[in-house]
Length: 446
Ligand code: NDP
Ligand code: 2IT
Image (tube, rainbow, N blue to C red; front, side, top):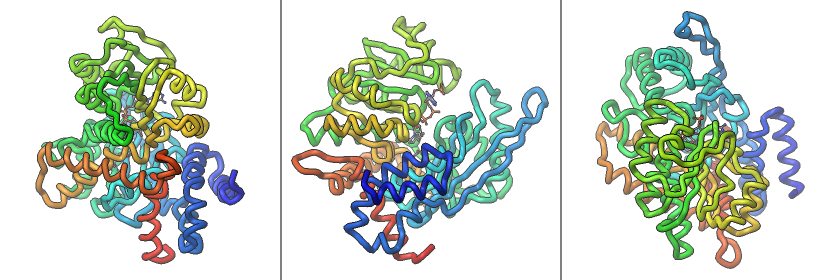
């Protein structure tokens, strides 16, 4: 390891003990940035990287609520306000039992670079709770969301901090959260994104992360004179990102053969077509069932407790959660013919897996570039809220495509290596850093 990176990381580890995901995210960025900062001493003297790795503010609070049996439940709520150099804090809320401070700090840290890459004026943040929406009634989810927002509402606002969805937070949760914010503050504002279209949402926001990831993959393939048409694709997850990744791949002539959830994965060699996808969306979004039911319904294999990395495919779209692909999985994927990884999820690949991608020189689009379409359309939702004018589907989709192209071009600009290899990790990290770092330099030691 570069001794400068090692020294920087030992400080991060000492200051942030027991936060392995945060260390992992910072380390990946530091490896790209420290050599760049050495060549650009203005960032070094102003300790920009050291400041970026320290959240501007961390909020942690009690979330008491009453379940359907009349029993008091206590969860923990968080909001990490990571960086506001280029705009209000912006980033999702995650409701999942694994949520803790370190996981949200990794997500908030990634978000700073991702939001900068979108070209829109958004700082970085992330929040959530260890609350598990699985198995809870709508009434319980509402009571939890109301209690969570009762505290969060003091800290957010359309010009301060604008949360959205992430794992476990979709349209239903955003509705309950928005209702409670409006009630407490007596203000109808764009304080959250991912709202329903009837009350301030943007068309294409539900689709944006998945569509954006596929647009990014198409851009990577275009550089090689190739496209997704006719390609067999492996998708993990079956939530928001996986669903719309699948929808766009089908539209572009690819074939999606896997979907997963925390219980296991299904392998449908015939391909998930539009009808099967519509059924799976109803299963996941309305009936809130398990992906194993897809295998029963359509007569294909279900692999309990496993991930889909043994399956043969040309392109892989990890869209469930962090660290779901390790080095061994990566080797299997590549041995099976995988030529492209586009990360819909945040940090789904372990550092060792990334090393395997780099060594084999396949196309690898890291999450902070590939999945930035979601937050980009959140930014467009904020714009529409400020104008009090909605855009059409076509308008938003065209802007999303333009943004994904621009993110790809930024990655190429900063990640072009010898020959025609593009290091998208380096490209995304430096490309995301420069705008935030220059803003921090202009604003002084804050
Ligand atoms: P959803 O809650 O809609 O779906 C999550 C999916 O991932 C579900 O299928 C879920 O299975 C599965 N999953 C979650 N945790 C685990 C786990 N620990 N092990 C195995 N499977 C798991 O979330 P999203 O689709 O919104 O988010 C997916 C990923 O995309 C996350 O990494 C998120 O941070 C990232 N992302 C999301 C964006 C958005 O706009 N929503 C934007 C950019 C990135 P189960 O139902 O069994 O829990
Ligand atoms: O990880 C992410 O970029 C998101 N969960 C979306 C954040 C947002 O503010 O739309």
